[in-house]
Length: 232
Image (cartoon, rainbow, N blue to C red; front, side):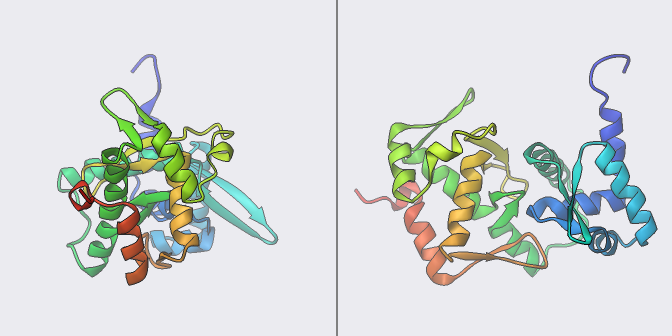
């Protein structure tokens, strides 16, 4: 390619198995140390340091020092969407690294995608917001309606604060397990935080899975019902 964006550099960075494992591990939105990422990638500390330097130079991750420790996280929502879309592309073509098991079922049901809810329950939330008229979603745009503003304010979401962010309020993110859209953007992140703050669900320390409590899932399904479950 003689002109335009150089996708080969990004492709080469992500294409290395060790670096791919590191990036996938950071998809839960948390920052990890080089030691933790080395263990995840099954490489030595020195090799991990080299990989992390390349990922940082490529704009895929960012470092942050806290006390004596240095942590690494994805560079931002754009990086998260890139990794999630590659996961979707790979899964759609059967490029899976292991056979489905119990943890896969948990991941398919609910997981964190950088900073918002994905999986079956993430898609359910998105579909519910659209079918209830809280979101307008078509081939050309996604937007919050006036009814949606009132609904979200009633749940405690501070829309005024979200709108001060440079980040888009609403964005679609294709779900790699459901092959349908879930909600990203600052609103998707705020709704995920609300779910955690209410104690409806907790994060799995060993994976990206989000475990809902039975009362929490009941409350979630009541707040975000399928159209078939709506009264009348």
